View 1 (cartoon, helix red, strand yellow):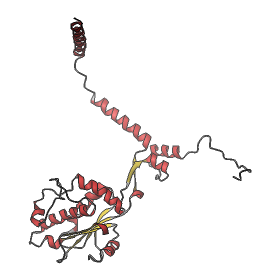
View 2 (tube, rainbow, N blue to C red):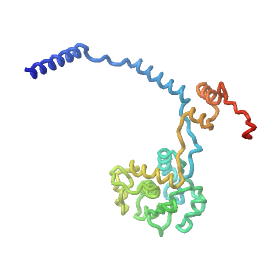
View 3 (cartoon, one colour):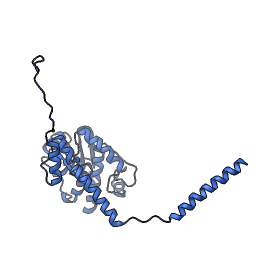
View 4 (cartoon, helix red, strand yellow):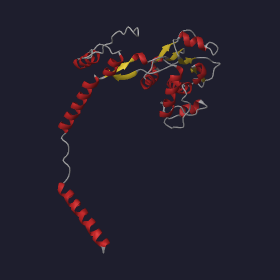
Length: 269
């Protein structure tokens, strides 16, 4: 009997709650204009507090270079490969016309000649394989001659060079290979297998591994921070607007009751 009374009470409570909910009807959709205004006010409040985002370029250390010592593929056709890596790692990446030459024995000098902490050299050398990697010495080499040995046309050779630039970088920077079908750093033991790769980009896993390897080589990214934090750390540039000026004055002002330190003859300080 008690069980029946209890179940009846629960049912009544449910019906009362459900019925009350049904009376409320559908929720009123938000007003787009009010939502937009709310987001603007939230953004303005955050900007007033932080002064906006700025970049600390002094945090960026080391240089990674793609050193071009070949003439089969125009360098402007390869530049965006380097630019994508620079944006991802927020570090000093560039493709440059090489100074001097390259040899396995003289690779350390070639790094110094081209101002590189680490580098991938693009060369034309009949005696070298398509890719050489020496991570302990911070260099890799892509041999364009080996990528054109089957008489492929210029467009196909260009595609191969671009892919091998990324694959050489991944191997040099600790990324290694990948089984991801959407990653260019897949196993390829022949030109045919290189051509058969479906992707022209590195996937997430080799990029993540490369971040730590680059730091170990001495290549670190620039830092994003707020204007307020830069003022507190003492390196902020001069303010460029009223909000930054207010933060600048607030952080740099003397306290209302500065700490007084008096000389104590007994202690000599």
